[in-house]
Image 1 (cartoon, rainbow over the protein chains, first blue to last red):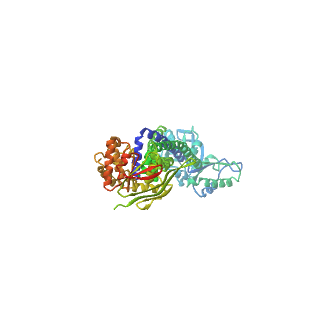
Image 2: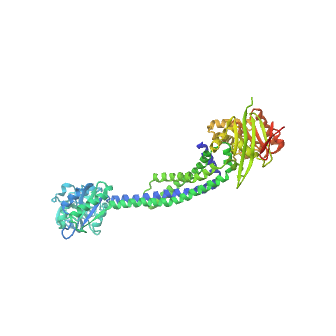
Image 3: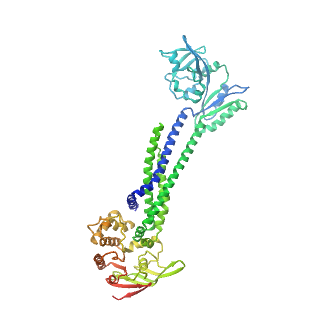
Length: 397
Length: 227
């Protein structure tokens, strides 16, 4: 029955090629724009967000400006921060500008950064050679460092830098690792290091602190286990910091990339919904087109409907025939629309330069939309056809 | 042994036209035996089309009793009427009413689709029925590729396909020339001889007289005609 109806519907659609084409065009445009918009928005924002995430969305950065009584965070404050649930590690960051060199070569504008072992555990960038700094380097009396390629080029142009000694602000250090100059994608340390520097040297944080002449840390990264809970963790971090600074206002700032990411996420969802909503207007217009054509078709085929009824077609069978016809029209439009939408988004994404990935959700939405449109807008004409009285229908000329 | 297959008792049909009620059928009594070939003769406006619609379950009477094969048919619901039409009535119309884009075979198959017969059996039955009306060679022709007489024979095959109790023909030769009209009547006679009950509605006295029995309808009243 369904099969026969489908064949009859197809026959009718093919027989009215131009009309059917123009009618489904609304659905084609609607579905194509829904698919294209969703795919483009998702792949562009997805790219943006994954870049953002790699910049350190899994951490909260505290910038402790301090106040008259306390200039920054003490080591015991760091321990308290580390004990907060969902905090997987705390990494203070000390950055100063100083000199570095060996006999004969001296760079006097080097950015010296003090980091702890947590930083190296969390930082995913691989070193070019050598090893990272570990907990064993952090006792405050070990003088090991990691230098970047700029420094290698100027100080050790033709040598293997690993194991060499380098003098940092008057203190001798052993080079244990080399990293890429560009590797530091971390937003916050990017802000801290001066762009005109001759290079970056990373030394154990305690050593850096004594070099800086300060006794407290002004810059601390707090790493999270679960970024979904960043809001809760944030609140607890604030509580610890408030206590640390004795509830004095403006003693610290929190930069939370995770919550920025959350905001971006919800903005992406909002944007997707909004664009889908706008594109859906085209679908509704397309649906009205289908309804219009179906109503015309019912009127044109009144006598055929009467005949079918005289031959024993039940109202439900007539209704099925017309609903299937509407459904076929919108589904054909939907399939063409999906193909068109994917092509458009593929080209657009290629031009934008991000990676194209087929969004199955969008395809499902496209098919779902066209089926829904066919059903909703086919219903009324089909109902009208099924309700025709056979004698009235047969009498029509 | 002929049995009474159609009984109408005091059938009244009224139509409301605005505020006025016009009575089209004024208490029609009619009984038809199985195997009869009956003509209902009447001029236009006599109520013969209304009577045909009621006999064919395309319409329901305002009052009165209608028994088909002894069963009282008082269903008002369109779904039920459709089922009765499908099983009991084979319609033949003046202007054939074939689906123009479907082959002769598909047209004949149509009632079987609504009866839920599967495709293979449908094909077999329809092909057999087309052979019976002499169109075995033209099964895959579209209606426009057939002559008027051939088209009407396709329609007759379609009417017979569900093996109906009554073959109900409305001016079956009205759109045909005399010769092909005559051929269609021949086919009716042949079917009647095979035991098929036929009711033919016409305004043509000569045509009506070809039936074994003629009833005349005038102004909503029916009267038996002695042939």
